[in-house]
Image 1 (cartoon, rainbow, N blue to C red):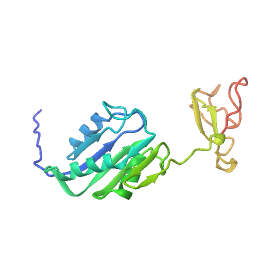
Image 2: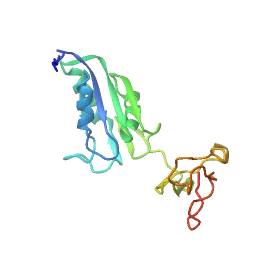
Image 3: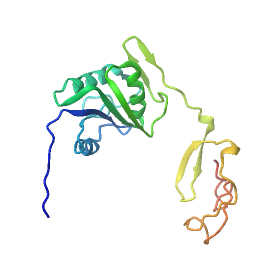
Image 4: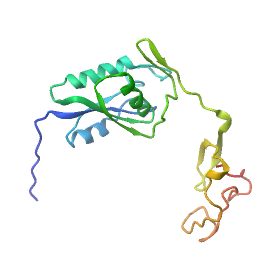
Length: 193
């Protein structure tokens, strides 16, 4: 088989890639995007080298320097750059365009629409963390036997009762109808949705 690799000469659209609360950065994801014709900066903002170990306080000045660095790079096509964020990185991707110049796009993966963990600072402004009502969070056992926690849903938001699950390994036999408020194991508490 014959093949030919063609590399462009640029400039390329620029992207800053931000990971979530796992810390560090996703070098492989940045490499995959670079292979598709983007200039990508995988940016760690905590739990890496001399960066903070927790995200209780974040300063947007750090991210502003990254945006400017990417915008000034000769291989980056302007006039703006894009952001790609997962989890906490997604929250930052929503906050950054509100305060910083030069951002023209943001892709949010599994992120909250508010600042949840830690306070975000930019110059004289601060964005406090939004609280979570722990009284509404319940731990439940899923039908696959894994533990999950999530806020309780109002009764009208639940799936209709009587739904059949013909291929589920959690059902005793094929075609068993499950009631979403009961558990398969009588020793376990009822499932909360």
